[in-house]
Every structure is written in structure tokens, then in C-alpha cells.
Amino acid sequence: MRLFYSPFHSFIHKSLVAAHEAGVHQQVTYVPTFPFRNTDGEDVRGQYSLAAINPLDKVPTLALDDGQVIYGSQAICEYFDSRRQAGAPLFPPMGPARFDAITRLALADTLFELTVQMVMEGWYEPERRHIEVFEWVWPKIERGLAHLDAQAEKGWAGFDIGHVGMLQMISYTDFRNKFYGEGDPVKPGFDWRKGHDALAAWYERACQRPSVTWFFNKDYAGDKSPAFFKTQVDAVLAAQGRRAS
Image (tube, rainbow, N blue to C red; front, side, top):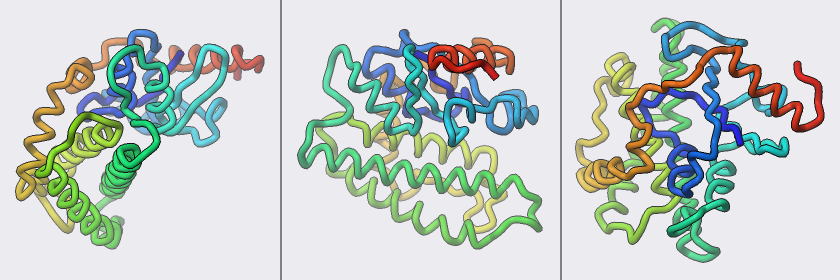
């Protein structure tokens, strides 16, 4: 199976954590996919299009060997979890624990997406930015972090898909603050750790999991070229009985 994803390892990717937690990460071919810029900062828009296999043209996208394509990070994580070879599942069985986990996942995913929105808004020149975006997003982020910190104070019994989402969201918040934080028009230099001691302590512990350390803050060492990407998309199309583009 092939996982098309953005190989910026300076934040934690849910799909990579889920693959490792399930014990299937070595069965995956990882295909670097860059919607905008590559890891060298070069503008590569249009060179890594997934539109032929994913109508959303969006990472992450998982292509199975039989040609089936799964997109959406929650769907991909659930597929990996269904292939689990040992240990407790990330998605608990139906019941209160499951809904607690997927509700935390929904919160973390939304906060992540809002932070991405602020990053993209920050690409504009200051005079072209919409300050209303930042004013609308920040209260949601602050309430979300406070809610998760209160839960962290009570503690969790295990590690589930909600925690995987939290790892991605928090690490991306750090990533965003490192590169764009000082230029934020509403909260420059924001440090999410201040006032969220329990959440910060949980995050530091969770970052030591093998499912995180195998890739987090480590450069991607494989082929990142558009040519390699195209061969992988063409292989998916061939598995579907479709002609390569």
C-alpha cells in the first residue's frame, strides 16, 4: 500500500503514528506529496497532483494494492487500526470510550485545521491578510487548549485516536509558532504551554512513544521527486485498470 503524504517531519502526522501503533508501518510505501512548496522551499504547485486518484487532491491519501483509495486522515487511521497486529486498538469498541476518543479527535482535528488556515493567511503580505480570520480562530484555539488541559489534569487510562489527533495538533501549533508566530496580528509569540501545565506534561511524555520518535524531527531520506510521485500515481491507476495520465 502507498501513503501519499506531506513529508514535513517537524510536526507529528496522525497517519504515521497510527501505522506504527498498528505495526504495519513497514508495509507502507511512503510517497512525498507537496501541495505548495517542497522541503527545500521551492514552489512546486501542480507537480504533485492527486486529482487522478482523489477528487479532493489532498493529503493524506492511502492507496491499497488492489487500487482502492482511502482519503481523510481519520479514515486512513481507522484502516491502519483495522490491520492491527498487536496491542489495544486506537479506536475503542462502540461505547462511551469510543465517543470520548473520537470527540477529542474531532476537537484536535478542527484546531489543527484552524491553525493551518492561519498559516496560509500568513503567506499573504501584511496588507492583504484578513485580521478577522485570526480574531475568529484564536478564541476557539484558546478554549480548546483549556478544555484539553482540564482533561489532562484528570488523566487518561490509555492512548487512543483522540490522543493521536492531539499530538498532531499540538506539534503543528509549535511548528506554526516557530515560523509564523511572531508575525501573528492578534497573539504574537503565543506559547500554548503557558497555563496548560498538565497538557504540556502529557505532550512531552507522549512524544516519547516509538510511534512518534521513528519520524518526528527527522528528515525524510527517500525520493521526493515529481517523477517518483508520478510513477506511484500511475501504479495506482494501473491497479484500478485505468490508463496512466
